[in-house]
Image 1: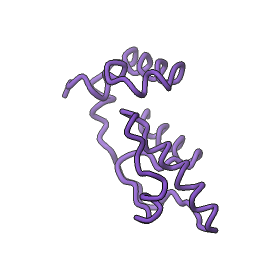
Image 2: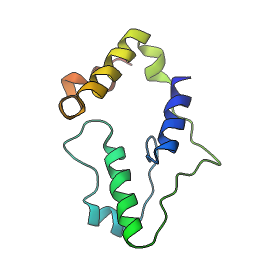
Image 3: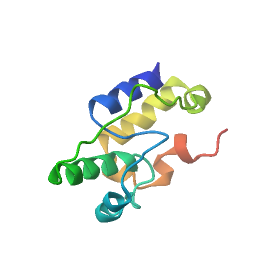
Length: 113
């Protein structure tokens, strides 16, 4: 359920979020690639910049939905609802601080497998 909600959210907001992002190499270079200051959600910033780059050139930004990739639910299974809620709450309430500090992102970086 959580993964489906994330997929719907990313499609609605036009975020190329998840396992696979494909773009033109000139676009990637010109926008500066992924934001190296972020430990998670860097693809959201990349998506925004790619959309803007394309719009300036009359190009369309498309999220492919016909054959969606299925990502592993491992993180959803390994963490309790409280841990997931706490992590996402921290990110939503203070994204500038939490997205730039690995210690604030245990779901991605604590090594639990």
